[in-house]
Length: 240
Ligand code: GLN
Image 1 (tube, rainbow, N blue to C red):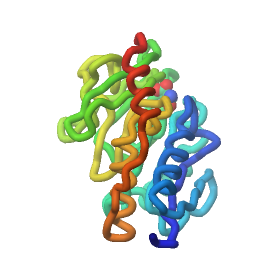
Image 2: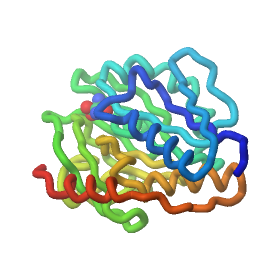
Image 3: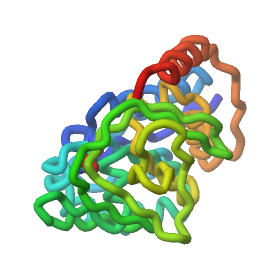
């Protein structure tokens, strides 16, 4: 196995990282390590130079105030993120970061926080928070299970594919039964939980993209996912 490390970057770990989102970075790191890959965990904080040679990027949810804190920096690194997205770098953006990978998030006070428009989507805060366990179904990934807590209502452009259809819960806006968005290898989703420990198929898809980009091939050595399978069963049976 290559001794060259896979470089996994977490965006804004202080401001944008709630409801267990840190678990997404840990899951990717552990699953890579279990398959014999070295992993270097990097962080990008506001004001820092954007790291070089990144293979995989995660970003989490946050309060509206967290989004305010990172807005200027995100716009500064937006071109870099676009280039990486277009070159096929896999990314997972949850909730608040998902919103800012769209055109904007408008808060309940009417402050329009500009995003970087990787997704053809826009989000406006609604009158009530959408909170609870959520189950969705995707043709590509099967059942995706998590927990949502947001006021933002996201509307996708007609040309923007969703990640999944909502089976139980609200998803993007509680109306059109769509959840998340996908552009090339970039996934946006409202699902916290953390998402990846309970959805190993999604984790392995991100890992495969990163490893194939870097090394040209990926050996999906099986991992014992009994605990993840049990966690999925429990999560599906939970009340909204
Ligand atoms: N500020 C956003 C909202 O409430 C993000 C919430 C989150 O990231 N959990 O819609």
